[in-house]
Length: 146
Image (cartoon, rainbow, N blue to C red):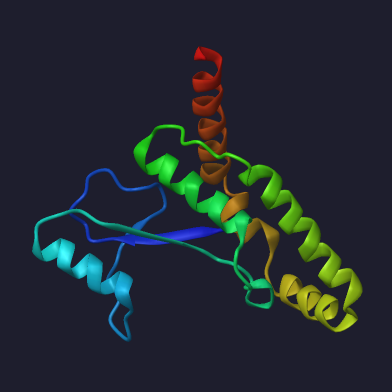
């Protein structure tokens, strides 16, 4: 699941792929907190997962797992995942079942997917694959030490 984000630019340690935000427009609480952190001289990073709008009913463990991976990248340390892998797989199976059971949704998703070339997806980039492999190695190093 793609994760994107922004930073107030005060941190030299920002998650890979996170850009300094230059957004201007309607804002929410996250933007207000980042603004206050900036005013206090604190670094701030805002991350969000791109959950498909047709499956956006919370909770979404797949999004949680993706965000946890982005936080691991930013901190360069493995974080406990608990049962998120299993919950994420169950969520994915449920999403696939929704599409199998509802022809209209399946056609809609197929149309959305055809509009976007897989090679352009962030999770298909070499950098994204390298980050995922680094996360795997950090987790493996932690579990081997136990």
